[in-house]
Image (cartoon, rainbow, N blue to C red; front, side, top):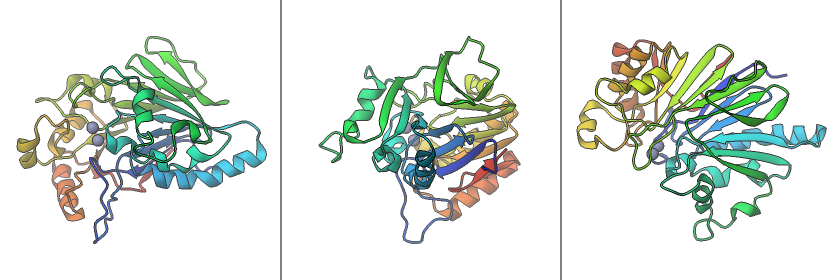
Length: 303
Ligand SMILES: [Zn+2]
Ligand SMILES: [Zn+2]
């Protein structure tokens, strides 16, 4: 029996590229990957290099499932966008290679190419030895838009999609709302709001806050229990990187205050920052928004 009804866990917390420093890192060196799950429904937000460890963890659970059931084991991926730091771990995600695993991929079409078309380029023979159709799992690809709500019901491990104006069924377990964020090069990103009963978690990575706070995102994040927010830069660095699609920890704190979030988690850490740099940022951020901490690999939150 699982010791949770809902669980959130970080497997990758860096932006841009993975870090393997000689000194090691207690914060974590893998790129974006977050698990949001109930015992029945597994949702993975982004497949940065962190997804490799998550895949290894899921293998025993999948084998157990397969011993007891003929039905496939369902896993749902939702991609914030398809920049390499959000997809690079996928070819090394062990369940992809397993028969009787059903993987549902949701992501945005980008610059006129469908999400499926974009994701398939990741494993083109020029880049990777195994092609998408050679993985033994079953795969389904969905282009998503901000009009979609992805949701689950307790009795059904596969996701369903509703229009945002539709009333969701009362027996839903998890639901994920999407928002298109325009200020991330070159075709935006998709902040997500995960809802489990009365709990709300917002995953807003790869967003660059507008001056004064992006009011659409602030409304989307209103009263979140946890706001996971891009905080790649210091104010000093931002002067050089304005327009690159990422926020400062100061603007992340401002967004959390305006959204009246319970807790702020700084995410998409700059790969150039050492643990000490990041802890210094955390300290400064706490002066602005006290209930704030760095995203750390392995951190989890259970309900
Ligand atoms: Zn990123
Ligand atoms: Zn990006």
